[in-house]
Image (cartoon, rainbow, N blue to C red):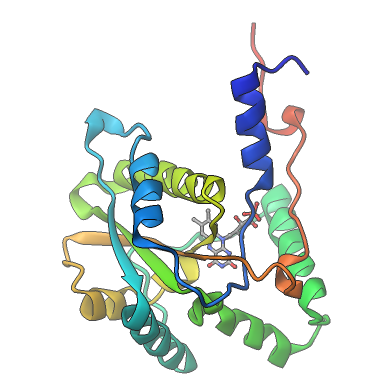
Length: 226
Ligand SMILES: Cc1cc2nc3c(=O)[nH]c(=O)nc-3n(C[C@H](O)[C@H](O)[C@H](O)COP(=O)(O)O)c2cc1C
C-alpha cells in the first residue's frame, strides 16, 4: 500500500468504526455531540442544500422515545416514511444473512429460536441501551436525492463519532415507526424520517459487540474501464 499519512489515518478510523449494539448508560457531553455534528455537516450535498435535520434526544427524552418505541413494537404496525427495500437477492441477500447470523451467533440465538430473534430485534427499539438517539429527516420535496445527501451525513456522523471515542449505530428499524416519531418529537409531516442513529459509549464487553462484518473485494464492486 502506498497511502499518504492522511489517507492512512482515515483508513484506520474507517476500519475502527463498527455498529455498536450495546451501550453504557453514561451520557456524552453536549460539547462532544456538537463537535461531531459540526464535523458531519461538512459532507457534500446537491446544491449545498444540506437537507438533513437532526432531532437529538438525550436524557429523559431518550427514555420517553425508548419507552414509546418498545410499546409500539409489541403491536407491530410498521409504517416507514421511506419505503423499505422490496427485497434482497443474490450477493445482497448473502451479505444480509451473513451479518444477521454473525449477530445471532454472538448473542447466542440459534437457528429457529424465534423468541431469541424477537428479543434481539426488540433491542433495536430499546435503542440498544444508548443514552442518545438522533432522528434524521429530509424535506419530502427533495425526494431520493435528499435521502442520498443524508446518507452521506449518516456515514460522516458515525465516523466523526468514532474519532471522538463515541460508538454509534444507524437504525432503519426505528424509522419504521415514522408516525409515532412525527408525533412524539414534533417532526413536521413535510419531512421524511430516514433513520435513527443511536450513540454513546460502547459496552465493549457485551457479546453483541464481539463480531465484525466483512467487506467485498475491490473487484466485486468496481468496474474498471480504460
Ligand atoms: C441506513 C442504515 C440503517 C441500518 N439499520 C439498522 C437497524 O435497524 N438495526 C441494526 O441492528 N443495524 C442497522 N444498521 C447497521 C448495519 O447492519 C451495519 O452498518 C452493517 O451490518 C455493517 O456493519 P458495521 O456498521 O459494523 O460495519 C443500519 C445501517 C445503515 C447504514
